[in-house]
Figure 1 (cartoon, rainbow, N blue to C red):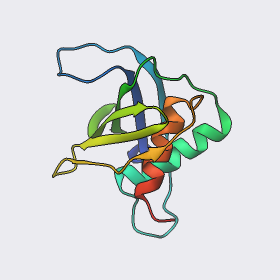
Figure 2: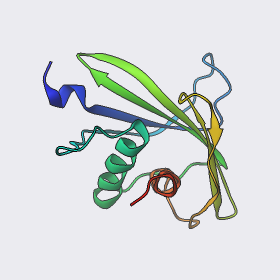
Figure 3: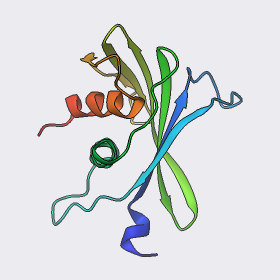
Length: 135
């Protein structure tokens, strides 16, 4: 397995509220990316996701969620195997968004961030993750 295969991150955005494994939610979009840490310690899953989403939002347009709730699954892919790392359960309404972070024990909620009504799901999550990561 090469280094680039080890670092492949998949971020899948689901439209609607995650209520359990047996529920199938429509996919808003899926973003695949790789980030190299260039000699520094490896990025955490959330830092890596932020870097990938920053590149995505600069290059591509993505869809807005249809309602106030959407879920994001961040997975690491290596050798054809996908390993879920973190799930974000996002609530975005009236220009304020926050997320429940599940998968990084203990589970926790982010602080609210501001977003614009025309922000896509990717942009909303990028703003949430950006508030968590020191620049």
